[in-house]
Image (cartoon, rainbow, N blue to C red):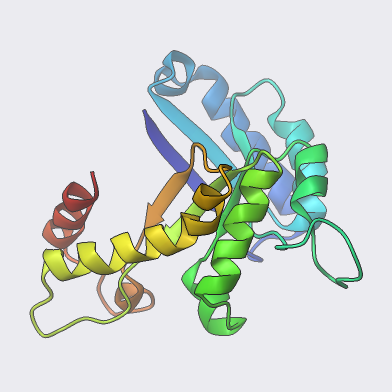
Amino acid sequence: MITIGVSLKTYFSHARTLEWSGAVAEIARRHPATRSGAASLFVAPTFPALVPVRDVLSGSGVLLAAQDLSWADEGAFTGEVSGAELREIGVDLVEIGHAERRSLFHEDDATVTAKVHAAFRNHLRPLLCVGETTRASHPGAAEAVAEVTAQLDRGVSTAIADGLAGAMTVAYEPVWAIGAPAPAPDDHIVAVLAGLE
C-alpha cells in the first residue's frame, strides 16, 4: 500500500483548512485507489483544527495526523499537546522529527526518541521523518542509507527496549534538498529508498 499525506503546517486559515480537507475527503470517497485500499491518505492540520478536520474526514478513509506531540503524557508543560489527548480525539498518526522541528526548535535525537516512545505508548502510529543532512559533491546512496538507518535505529531504540514498538510510517527527505533551488535527483531518492527496504 502507498501512503500519501500532507502536513498543512501553518499555511492555511482555519476556514481554508476545513474547506481543503473536505475536498480531499470527497476525492478519497470516490477514488479507486483509496476505495480499493491500494493507497492510504492522511491530513495533518494545525492543533486547533484537529477535531473539526476529524469530523470533515469522517467516513472518507482519510487518516487524521498531528504535526507533533509532547514526549510527556501529562503535567505542567505549557503549550504542549500530549499523545494521550491526541489519541482521545481520534488522531491516527503523528509526525515526529521533521527537519523544521530539528532546526527551528532544536529538537535532537533524544527528543525525537522520546516522542516516538510517547506515540507508541499512546497507540499512535509515528510518522518518523528522516533524511541525511549533508551532501558531498557526489553524494552516495550508501552513505545516505547509513545515516538514515542510524536515525531510524535511534528513533525507535527506547520503544523497542520497552517492548512498545509497532507499525510506523517513515517519511524520507534529504535535509540538504529542503529549500534548495532544485530537489534531490530522482535516482538518489530511488537508490536510498531501495537501500532501506
